Image (cartoon, rainbow, N blue to C red; front, side, top):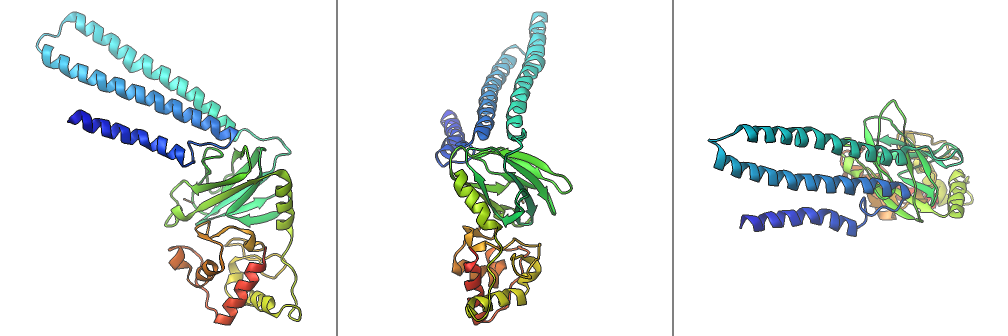
Length: 334
Ligand code: CUA
């Protein structure tokens, strides 16, 4: 009976890696960098499983022997026990630790080793609770969605504006903390075009779980085109040509939005929240918590606490007409 129960527990534990490999994620790497991390993971799992089973056996054996022989511990047995302690207590752990350390250094280097000097560099800055994304080579600024060229190593420089966060896109690389006052670096590489989800992996407050990131890997031409489009300021408007968009822009500039958000090409240059110059080109809102649709955007503007409790974005008071115009304007920022 007890054996059967143990069997069920063991199967349950085994199911975790097996099931997660079915659904993608860490166990299904899509990157030559993450490949090495997963090798390390399997070696560690295998080694610790073998040691665990071995120790359970040893414990059972010791218990049985102790109950049989407790009264007559002999000199020879003590000698044998000494070898067991020296071998099992020193030699074996030292060997295992050295092998794992070498493998760890090997895997760690693959994700932190500098990419070539012509590699794309992306600065990722952690905020409670969203990701600022900057491309220093072009001056481009966006948020929560990182575009990279596929098949190329990309330098990620990680900083934090407030508390410790951790950048983790399991299919593309290992994870590294964003620490206030210092810059950490990480290399990510996608072996093919695709979209890869990531997550802040260090508890950073109420919306830690709501601090998601999306990496979009695309072929070099599409990436270059994206960079060029994102580098453009928002189109200049005048009330005679497009009254509705103009109204929307006035709603943005005349409300609290402007204190925190930038729309390049307007007077809005706040930096506390994400840059909105190309907000309509992003797939999701609120650090990838909700789809970027008109309805979700309206809800997010009017009552952000209902969408993401604790978020630092305050609610915005707008008339129905102002909201309608603002939504039209934001949706035009492709
Ligand atoms: Cu940021 Cu957890």
